[in-house]
Image (cartoon, rainbow, N blue to C red; front, side, top):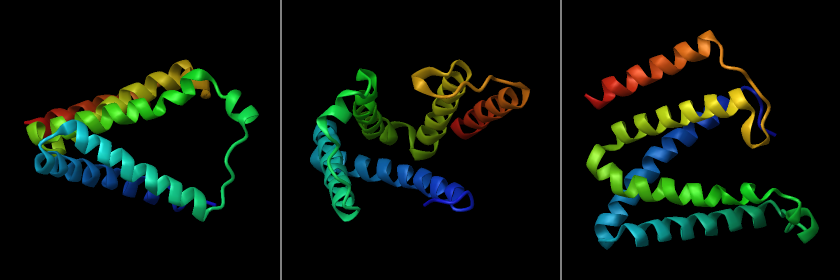
Length: 148
């Protein structure tokens, strides 16, 4: 079980992992001379890792009845991941990892504030308030400074 103490550390490490992932994928693209195949290989390796994790955890395959109750839109997460991987492969060499990740985080923050505010995608509604708006403004200011 992940504790409240370790969760922020793991989240920060996941963020660092995204930077490393994008840099590695950009190198793979250059070596293969193909963004599409670099993305495919990235996903294939990720699929193998998730399969190994499921086996290591002895996580049973979900029953068809259970899987069929999941909303149709919940199945599209992989497509968004593919867009993220593909854009990273193409844009990191152009923008650099710092600018790409700053813009990525800004986009994530704007989207997450909107999702929270409206309670989209089955999540709890958390209205936008003053401190959140200040945080978003500071984040956008940080992106501008990193982009310079």
